[in-house]
View 1 (cartoon, rainbow, N blue to C red):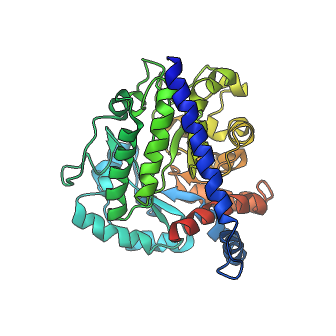
View 2: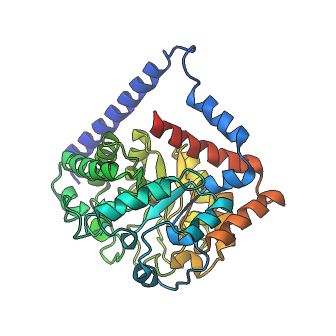
Length: 394
C-alpha cells in the first residue's frame, strides 16, 4: 500500500466528517413552530404501541415464516416451494405477530408483474413492514441474476475495487438503488464492507471490494451514497469482518483469529468509514472472534463485539441487524428462542430471518414479561427502527 493512496483516503474521510458536520449545523436553525421533531414523533408512536407491536418491529423475516405449516430443511427446499404471494394463512398469523420488515429472496421473485403484485401485499401487513433484499451486485443479486429482469449486471465488487476509482462504486450503488427504488424496496443489505484478506475464504471472496482496507473503504462509502441518492437505505456487513475466515457461517462454525488491534488496522478501517459517513444499518457476522471475546460465541451474540467495540469504541448509534438467524452457525448451537433473546441482550436491534419466527417472537415477549429483558431495552431498539422509518417518509 503506498502512502499516496493512504493520504487520499484520509483526506476523503476528513471531507466526509466536514460535510456531515455542515449538514448537522444547518439542521439546528429549524423553526420550532413547524412539525414535531422526528424524536418527538418517535416517542409519541412508542407511547401508543403494545409490547407485541414493539417486539414485532424488531423482526425482519422471510414471507414463509408467516406460515407455520411450511416445513423445510435446506434453503433449496424453500427455493423449490417458490412462495410468491402473501396467503390468507400468512395474514392470519401476522394479525397476532406483526413484523417490522420483510426480506424477499430470489425464489420469491418471478418477474416484474409478480413483483408488482406482491409488494403491495407486503405493504399491507400488520406492522407496516419495510421491504428488504440482498442486491449487492455480482453473484449476490436477487433481481439482476433473474433472467426475467433487464437491469444492469455487475461482475463483482472486486472488479469495481480493482479499478481504483470510488466513483465506479457510486455508479454501481446508484444504479442498483435506482431500480430497487423503482420496484418498491426500502433497504438493500449491501454493500459488503469486509476486507477479503484470506485467499481461502469461500463465502466473501469477490463480494468484497478489495483485500486492502484503504481501497475498500472509499468504495463502501461511495456505494452507500449511491444507494442513498436513489432513495434506498444501505447496510454495511458483516461486522466485525468475515473476510479473514475459511468457513461459511451459512453451514456452520466460522472464526477469525485476529486480535482487536489487528482488526483495527484492517477490517475496522472500512467499518469506521461507513459509520463516519452516517450508515443507518450494520449487519453482524455469525463468526467467532476468540482473540477479541475470549470465547467461541458468535459475534451476533457477543456484547463485547456489539456493545463494547461497535457502539463503545467505534461510536456507532444506529441500527444493528443480525445476519440471517437460520444460518448453520446459529441453528447448530442455539434454538430460535435462545438466539433471538441472546442477540437482543448482546445489543442487536433487529433479528433477521429466525429459523422459527413464532418461537423467537414468543421468547422475546416472554423474556420481557419475566424480566430477562427490560421493556426499556426493547424501547431503545424500537426508537432506532422508528427513526429510520420516519426518515424514509420525509
